[in-house]
Amino acid sequence: MTARLRGNILTVNGQPRRLGRHETAMLWLLMCRPVVTVEDCQTALWPDPEDMAETWLTVVNVTRCRLRHALAGSGWEIKWGGRSRWSLERTEQQEDQRRVA
Image 1 (cartoon, rainbow, N blue to C red):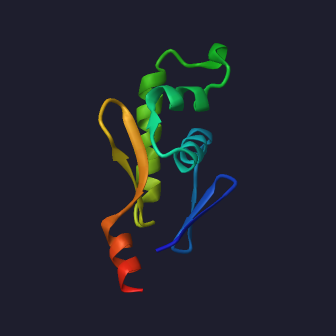
Image 2: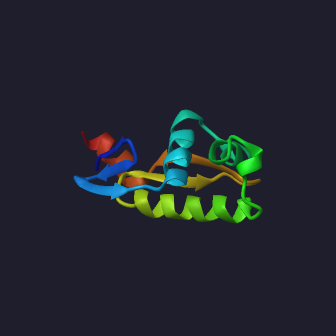
């Protein structure tokens, strides 16, 4: 299982998956930080508070769900850490393959 992000194209096992602007920003944030809060996502998606949608929390949650689906089969998943915290972690299948190799 491999995943590669180039621009806004996430390639999972040779299959390209186009990500939207918000999904790309959230994935970069998750790759750069061990734990991400809702407020971190808010800042990453809307650097200028004037541009922020009134329904920003719904947009953050929908973006997270879309990104979870895009990551399916890649060996990575978004884990819920409680108190509106998420992290990007390897799936158990990916860990098992690393132990075998």
